Image 1 (cartoon, rainbow, N blue to C red):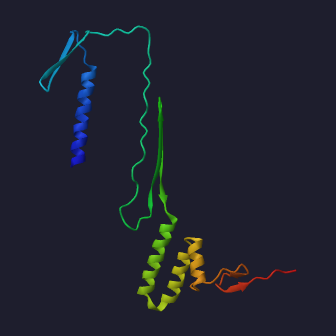
Image 2 (cartoon, helix red, strand yellow; image 1 turned 60 degrees about the vertical axis):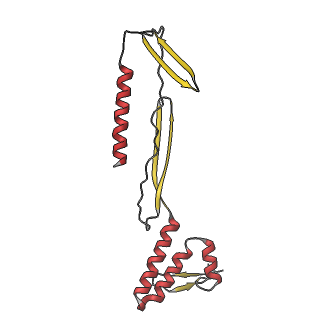
Image 3 (cartoon, rainbow, N blue to C red; image 1 turned 180 degrees about the vertical axis):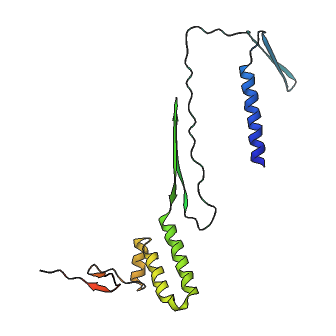
Length: 176
């Protein structure tokens, strides 16, 4: 509600300022300002001519509106994204752009959590699900993978072992 009220007030303020700037008058403007500071009276009087005449030509150069894109995410704790944006403006031009940014490490951690929850809910497949969860966790960072290998929680990768289409481990040896 406060934002709506602020927007309405801002609209009226800019509209009245525009109306004042586009009005013209043929009389001399006199403005007087006075103040009383510690018993001393001070006054300033401004006299301005009714019109200002320009000779020659002039060009008005303005800077375009360069605005960065807003938040394009979610306030859910499960969302692993944010917004990256950039804006540049100069006399006569403005360019802005933005795109969502998804954090791969965060999505892997969320997958790890969900697989662990599935392991707790399915005791028949808990061992396989926990092993799969550790594999997901190892894919996040090489340091995490090294720690899991050092503690024997996952197997050390062996470049001479591969898995075939049936899921069987096949040992590869070079042929002379």
